[in-house]
Length: 210
Image 1 (cartoon, rainbow, N blue to C red):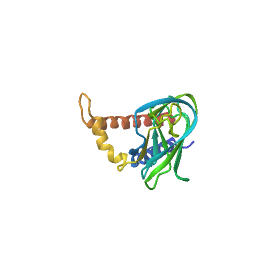
Image 2 (image 1 turned 90 degrees about the vertical axis):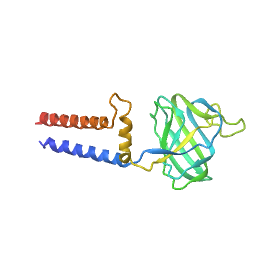
Image 3 (image 1 turned 135 degrees about the vertical axis):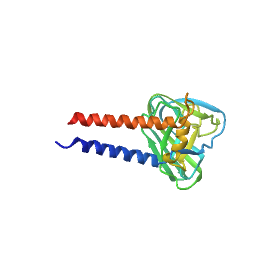
């Protein structure tokens, strides 16, 4: 039988590598918003619909688009941004994204700003009504999305200038606020407890496998 310590150490190495990879990436920030203006409203749809909105400004670096769709489960959502007949970017979010007021759809990274884009949204079948949030479209507009002729509010996201690791000090400082004994030390204490607990669990696991 192989030494169980090898498997445990390999798992630990993979975990550390995964954490390092995540910390080296940058969180998404809002690069721009939808061009639609007007009074906020909402409508409902049962899915299986597709509609396009013209005149959307697509900023450079956009790698995800956040839509104002609310659901408890969330159907499949597909996006395609076109400039004339050219596909600028596209992407898809699978079903099961619910439990929120928005859905973020990852798209192929945009390499340059495109001012006048037609964004087409396709929503798959839904087992529940979806809430669509945005301003009402004019009666003559062909761009009213889904039910109630409501334009879909969108936000364009791209990677921020700093990685999660670079943001760690400010995150720790904010997490330390609002406690009976506030301070950044609370975050490091919790981190130390997690590491100590993991080390003890690993020790007991190895002892049980002998």
